[in-house]
Amino acid sequence: MTIVDTPERRQLRELTRSFVTREVLPHLSDWERAGELPRSLHESAAKIGLLGIGFPESVGGSGGDLLDSMVVTEEIIRSGGSSGLIAALFTHGIALPHIVAAQDEALIERYVRPALAGTMIGALAITEPDGGSDVAGIRTCAVRDGDHYVVNGAKTYITSGVRADFVTTAVCTDFPGSGSLSLLVIDKGTPGFTVGRRLEKLGWHCSDTAELSFADVRVPVSNRVGPEDTGFLAIMQQFANERISLATQAYATAQRCVDLAVRWSRDRQAFGRPLVARQVVRHRLAEMHSRTEAARAYVHEVAERVAAGQPVVTEVAIAKNVAVSACDFVVDAALQLHGGFGYMRDAEVERHYRDARLLGIGGGATEIMNEIIAKGMGL
Image (cartoon, rainbow, N blue to C red; front, side, top):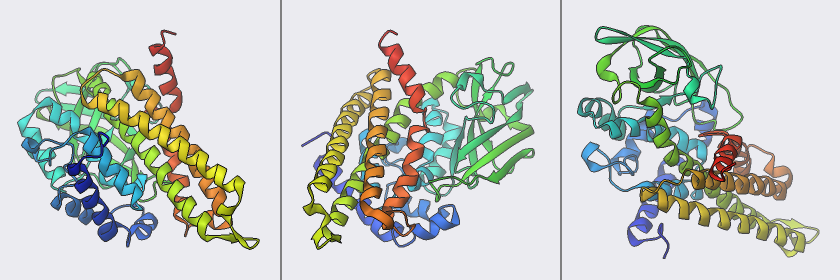
């Protein structure tokens, strides 16, 4: 029995599988075409406790930890969901942790509890048009004016930015690019806060993505998350969980594609024999399975250490890169084994092929992870 295979977590898997079968699979293709999830799905997930997994009951969550969240992620994808679905349905997983950690009861009541109840949608806004991974170089500024901050700037590639009711926003509280950062929760509808065009993407089609702009937006000081100038540390502290989540999505997507490829290779006839009867196909499937299993094992090991509070920055970066690399190989091989059908939108493997490409970019690109790993090696 592994750390993610306990009686309680098996029940959590069953609950998740039932939810996906009932609430997701009949509609996922329609949501992909629509470019977003319905708000009702958030409420449905909240009613059975899925939306609150990983958040303490004291703030409206369902309890559990990072490992429980991983179980949900694994099972959603293994049951036929997608990483895009996870990005859209669980965006609060990156929008809320900073607020919870700051222990601001007013903000918890106003944003955390409603989001975990599925009645509000939150987003996290860090990336800017002229800078991606350089968090310290953020140029969106917030200037103090009495009991308010006046915010000016722009954000881009914001997951759930179209639907979000509030956005946890990284702002510079000194001069642009100074690295002196704070987090402000900004409500949709605040004068000067504009949700720009919906961004069209290669994958994650059911996850809406937007550009945001701020022109003299007045935000109450009471909407600041934690003390001023602590935003950079708060962001860095949450990166481990986000990266483990992306690593989980990567190996789970790989596992789903292994399952799909095995099924296809057994059922598909070529030259009078099933594909799986050919050694080249069996060996390819074996390599796909091996890489997936190795990635899963390492991510689980690192995740257990993260959940225990150990400082494993380098190992988290390795875990993300290892899982993404395995996923890249497996989705490509799975689509190839599906032949012409794999290239069709009707093929589930086609969606995973597109969705997987983002995993090596989001939460810190592969190259950024390599730089972290190099520093961990003392280079």
